[in-house]
Length: 303
Ligand SMILES: C[S@@+](CC[C@H](N)C(=O)[O-])C[C@H]1O[C@@H](n2cnc3c(N)ncnc32)[C@H](O)[C@@H]1O
Image 1 (cartoon, helix red, strand yellow):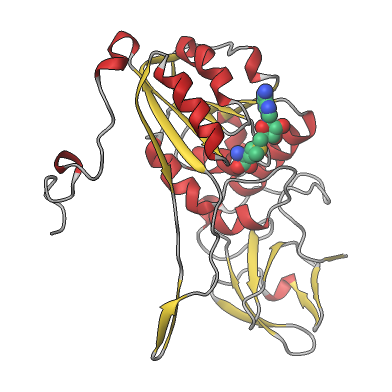
Image 2: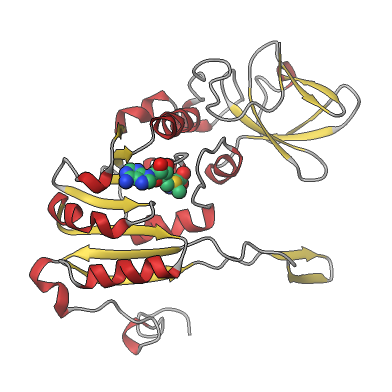
């Protein structure tokens, strides 16, 4: 049997086996690994005894990898070298099969902080798309109720979550195929996290479903959508609204050649957060990072 970089959760070989405990220790059957070639190309492979990963330079036998530690070098039949490591969440998000556009790793990290996600947090997430955001939330310890309008995307998100975090993670991932604009059928939530076109239509249901002080975060690709959302938030029980855009510029560092990379991901989306404050919502404003109160100096930071 052969595989050629089977994508996470593709279901091609049925349900993936449970990944190794905490992703530590020697690599074992069912573990997902990343093979990196000399040109930096990356291939995601699920280790299965007796199988081979096929490359342009001949096959790499999974048995060469099984039982060994991360960081090893293996060779294909015609001598190409591959470094083997377990993939990070970021690797998987960028490589996994997608039905819908995923939230990029550069935005996932800040989103977790803006939403202040903590272990055991009760989160409503909608829509689920390919499950990238779900993975980040579950990894941070959240208990998710997920509303997704499309059955195929709901199934894909569950498969991607199980493929990366193991079947056990599904106990904290309650996916329902439903339209979130029609209402939220739960209360006492800590967080509402939205990645869909008209999040302002969820403000009313979120006010009813969140506990006081709960946080709503929405990811939106265009500033006109952000403007509409902020306008509706300003007329709701949510306060302390903030909108940020995350710019990430990587650098080329090689000997004396140290400079920003020529290319970067110029735009992905905007993150807007707000807190449920009820009657107090209009009385407080989010801190302006340019004001003394919000400056690093004032907080004992650098400088
Ligand atoms: C951009 S994708 C979400 C991607 C996801 N955050 C990720 O990181 O993989 C938007 C999703 O919202 C879903 N959606 C759109 N409108 C919806 C609604 N009213 N209720 C529930 N889901 C909805 C779409 O089907 C789609 O899967």
